[in-house]
Structure formats: structure tokens, C-alpha cells
Image 1 (spheres, rainbow over the protein chains, first blue to last red):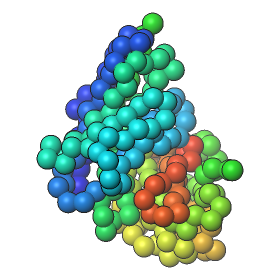
Image 2 (tube, rainbow over the protein chains, first blue to last red; image 1 turned 30 degrees about the vertical axis):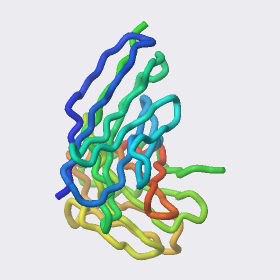
Image 3 (cartoon, rainbow over the protein chains, first blue to last red; image 1 turned 45 degrees about the horizontal axis):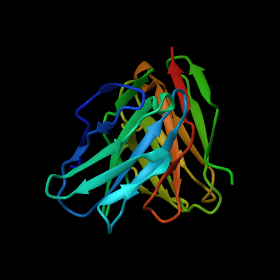
Length: 113
Length: 112
């Protein structure tokens, strides 16, 4: 069965510092990859997605992610974070032939002044 | 345009009671999904509808859980004989092309 690992449950960082949130998935077959953000007491908002093509994907709010097939990773990055980026971030995979998303446990990003 | 909406936003019930949770997908989206998010966890898949039919219900935890989508739009998730372990946020998502799912705000269910 497909699985997603987000190694860091919490990431504290200072404002304007760079950040990387790590995501690894288990399958080497064709997959679609997603990052969602969840602000407190809100639903999931799509940040970015990889379906095919360029391995570097740019999303909203200045985030980007790189698909690495050989390492089965899809790490999320932002060069300079803001206080407003404080939220929980979920990596998810959608394997071809299955309609469900499989999510990681999430990474709580806290941006401090 | 309007996104996915879910009602109620919060539901408190007593152990053993029956509850219904409603989802209104984005207009025109043929695919609809239900997920459950427990505290400190990522969402877990429950059931997927394509049109009116349940195409994959492999995530429903037991026969107390049931979902319908009679006209291919609004869906209702039904939980019978609720248990304290059913307490979670229930998320609904919809999709047009089965590649990107758009989520609603969720219903927080608390079973006392």
C-alpha cells in the first residue's frame, strides 16, 4: 500500500529564514504529488501539485517543490518565510489507478518573529 | 466561485446516537470524496463517489458508516450508533478531472 512519510512533525523557524519541509513516498510507480496547507480551524488549501513534466513545481505564496523520482521525494521549500506561513503542511500522493489521496501526518511550521 | 461547503461546521452528539454530515461539492464536479482527520493525523480516505455511485468505499471503517449521493451532487455521510472513537474532523473534497481535489472546511464531530 502507498504511504507518505513526513519526517518532521514540527519545524520552528525565524521570519525571513529559508525553510524545507520533507516528504517521501513509498511507491516508485507513476504518482501525482501534492502539498496542502491547513491554517488553524480551516480546511485544506492546495499549495502546489506535480502531475508530470518539469520536476520543479511552483505554487502559491512563494512555495516550490521538487519531484525526485530516484529518491521518491517531494520536498517543499520557501526561500524566505513570513509569520503568516505558520500552519500545518500535508504532503499527499495519488497513485495512478486509485482515486484516493494518501496523506502524511503533517508538519507544523511555526514562524517566529 | 463557491467552493466546497459542509454542514454543520460542528456537531456534538452522545454515544449511541445517529448523525448525518452534509457536503455540497463545487458545481459541476463529478467526483466527491470523504476523509476523516483525527487529532494530530493527516486525513484518511473513507469513500469516493463518481456521479451517484460509490466507486470505492474501502476506507469506511465498519458498517456503522454509510454515505449516499442520490443525485450526483450533494452527499451525506451517515454514522449510526456513534462511538467516542468516531470523534474527528470529517472532510469532504470534490474534483472535476480526478487529479486535483478541493477540500471543504470540514465538520468537527464530537461524541460524548
